[in-house]
Image (cartoon, rainbow over all chains, first blue to last red):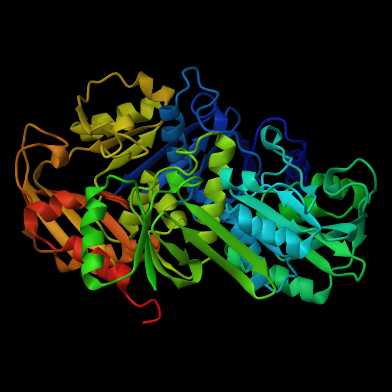
Length: 309
Length: 309
């Protein structure tokens, strides 16, 4: 049984997991969907004996029925490295590849359908509340007057991206920004805006969930910096996970049908962890490098697990 | 409790269903997501009492907690009718709207996650086989040699779009086309290609499934035309649904988590219905106009049903 890793060519984070899988002696195929068609080939036939398919890269060929798991890391867009690129080719290639892969019995980290749903920030906040997390008062609105009223109530505010695009994605960086309660909110009418009560935090918490295993890390907050997740200063240190957080994480992951999730919390002076977001495709290498927590090992173990076990 | 209809302004098919809902006295809001922001406004807040949101159009305001169902007909893309259009605005608006809507308890026809999965043609064929339908031998491949071998085996072939884009979507029309077994298949390497055994059909069957209700219609095939679904000639007439087809449809709909599906079959000389595709957003007005089958009425009844019943 083979592990399929979908990611781009230069992905040092994937390299960490691949190295562990090699050590474990687990067969794996790594490919970038951007290389279909051209350097990645596929075939599936539907006959009287059901559905049979396979993938071929330069190095390997793998039957779809022998896939044990699929890890969606940082896959490129199908068709984008072809000689004649077009929207049509991308659609056809994307449908062929993911249509075949989702027809297999492989376990997914994460399944594309679950991943798409889990990216919705308004849904994240809702599921977080339902899972028992402490969620900062949040407003998503296109009504300037409602934004004005929210600012009057909470005074100390931040504005964020609704779509929750992470600074991991360079084209769409919008860090969380603190705003004055006297701000002019008329621009809210031009697009839905997310305002959130500013949590006065003593530390950032990153909790990485891999299957049932949790790895939490704490970094003392730089008080000058609102969105200190990506600040240069400070080092991540391992943190204990409170029991009630453990239960909420389990509920969240089950509701969202995720195998992997990177939760961001703000820890206040009372030690309360305020839920900020759960990034289903969040980075983990920077945590592992600081804390020595074996996250790559946990991912490899999850991917390598016997699907019938 | 209110029904939400997401569709563009000029949609005669939606008008049919809306008219029935009006007759039933069911409150409804119809809006085009393309009008957010600008003519459609939204707001949601997450506080200590959970999540509360509402939508406002020119005519109406509706609380998200009072939504009974959402009908995704032909919605425009959020942000595309704004004064200052951008990919960013579309993403933010799309995330705000669908993130909020998928957080409600409303029933969906169809849920966006299920719809996205159900569009995958390779997955459709797999689920169809698993549901017990008779599926024509089909190959999806980027290997010219495999295509060549398939053609040698089946001789009489058609080529289709993998992504299964329907002629409903004008920009991407690719009707099913008959090809010669002597064709040159080298171009298959340039993009995954779907080849299918040509079913010699006596009639086209369109089966529309609305919740648990099935409406089948038959049209005698024009033998000159391979893809006669959209041919000018012929009239659709009501057809009986064989019991085994009824069971397979139920399995398919449950597996795919769909509330609505438009199945296309080719009926051969033996009366066998060969599964061609299931379009989760397929048209039905042309069937209703020919057959007088009350499909719009069934959709309205499904949307109007008590969610707690």
